[in-house]
Image (tube, rainbow, N blue to C red; front, side, top):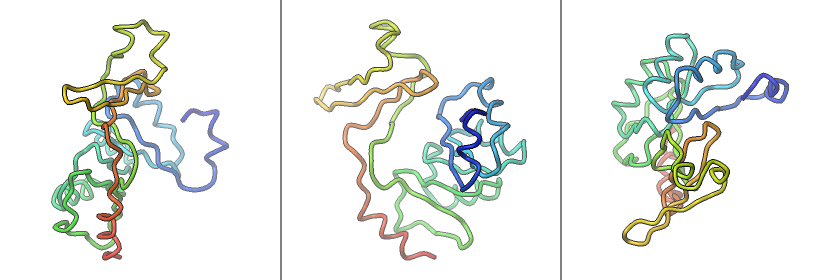
Length: 173
């Protein structure tokens, strides 16, 4: 998001997922976000930065919220919605009324973010925008992509598919 995008986001409600690694100097650029764009924080530093600014936020799955106690602590810290961890056992989770929860159900997701470019260190900076792959000792292939902060994100080798488990959400209002 930048100021030139302002007109595009005038109407509606939006979520802006912040990267799991973010430097202090970049946090300040989010101070001017319109109220209809909810920052989705990925680490405790981001969470407390926005809380100190009295800004509502959502908690991303990066915060590893895997039980109802952790979710409730964050709601008490003034988060507006909570994205549950991929490891959450939904059958034992206590969903509280008047709380907003979400869950990633399908797609690729990053398992690690590195501050420094792995590609630049080996092949020079001109190739870091290309997609790359890492292969582990068992032959599993992980996608390596560069985000807008020039950080590498390593994606799990198998796309997530929790469609069957997401039916648990339908039990709750």
